[in-house]
Image 1 (cartoon, rainbow, N blue to C red):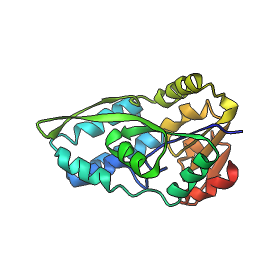
Image 2: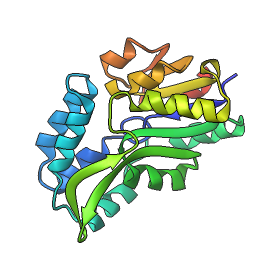
Image 3: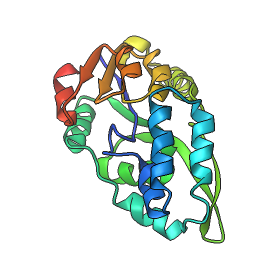
Image 4: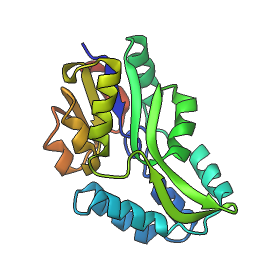
Length: 207
């Protein structure tokens, strides 16, 4: 009986990578997306890739960040899947190596219970190129999963997680139901189920 479901955000609940959308608006799209692709395939250290990509966003206005994050495209089926999980009494949480600027706005729309992500530092109305937060490292999702399970009194057998990239491996380790959603090969190898159709409603039958 599943009691906790943890989702990745970028390319899982949201159709794309938040940092890539921001980078496109700042004229560094190709450079940032190339790093993102390698990081999600497990070819780069997550912390190093995150800090490098964010440094390239220095000078982007906070107003532009907010506008982009308000309009991020949610994945098909996101509303229906989360509503279904909540109707079953399942706690729904998001762990994102991306940013609260995106996950907090998605939470207002999708009504999941909580999100843990990173914060883009800004000064004088523009990004400084620095970042901090709860999901800075490759191991962060697994560490937070353990904290959450201990806090809620929920076991690995009662936990499911859904993700697409290398930094989701650590949360898979503490989940009995591990769903790789349109995922990179490195994560598919660790999954109990793989979904290759870009529609989160496909997960409803697995719960």
